[in-house]
Image (cartoon, rainbow, N blue to C red; front, side, top):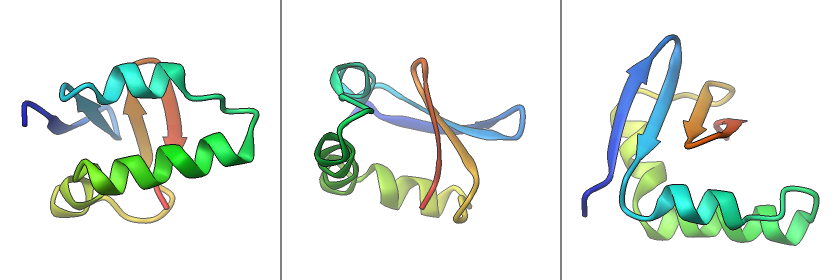
Length: 71
């Protein structure tokens, strides 16, 4: 639904579908907030799209200004 995953500069860049706004609103200092973010990525199909694009555990993922390792 308007979400895109592309490989750029050695990282997977996810854009669209409201996922960038959600990443900005996530409290990265709160473990529960991070878990919620992970569940939401699953629900929105982001994890599946990353896997189809070839992402593996430990690969860098960028969503807007948020950067994390895929797991």
